[in-house]
Image 1 (cartoon, rainbow over the protein chains, first blue to last red):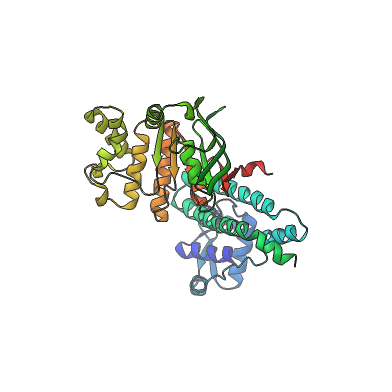
Image 2: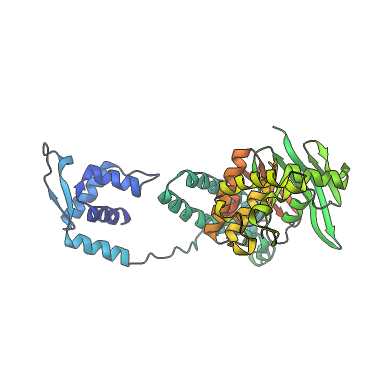
Length: 174
Length: 225
């Protein structure tokens, strides 16, 4: 859903060829995961069928890459609807880490060790993101910050859980 | 590479309250090491002991092969001025002095002439984006600017180790990030090691590695796997 909507948003900014759309997507959204050409053309075909874009022949030899895709009024309305709709907050209630902590306590293993290993793994990821953030442009910083704040929230949960493990063990084994 | 600063088996109690029970810290030249842990875990006490600001009840602190406990107070204090730099949560700037005078203070205490000390201080102020704040007093500066002055003061003497205790603890996230970027860059450029005490994982992520202190005991989380 997000990729489809971002294609529409890019086309709202400027009518363009599929090739340019892929490049624009990779530049703004696909930083660590560039989109495949096949995905771009599949998405454009669906948008065309849905009446969200139109296609016009561009200059040149008329090959598939020369077609110019333009957003329609329906497409613009769809972008607005997407932006207006808040995302569901993820609640992580089925966190595998939570499951590991409880399982460790149920089986008499060290839940503190589970938390310690995870803490270091999280910090490693945060160090890498911090390095990446410091060499990137503002958009890079923002996307890295998004990941860093989420990892930071996880770490706060780890620290909090570490402080109540003893009590938690008592409840779990009851 | 062997460690430049080593603290081993540190114990410290304040009355009946045990602050450090068995804490170790090793820092190699030029690396940034974070020290994390909950409030009251003993991480600041570990920093104070490792920096020679507090005498541990037991244990050993060696800097460049010297046992800090064997130094006289005068020599230990000279070592702190010449080899170490300090940044605390609240800049601890002298309110009566201007920003540039605050930065120059460690050099002045070490006998450098006022003109030479303030010239070097001005160079660091410029580098930390504070060139136009030289004549301001701490009360006229924002929290972020005060911390940048504190970072400049920590760096002015060309320290081998910077001890930073919650350097962004009193700042919002943007000002905190700016202070950490500057501290990180300056330390990397000058080859100074940093001991970074923080409860904030986003600050700790500037470090090359980290240790955790809990209930006065330290451990290296990379070693638990």
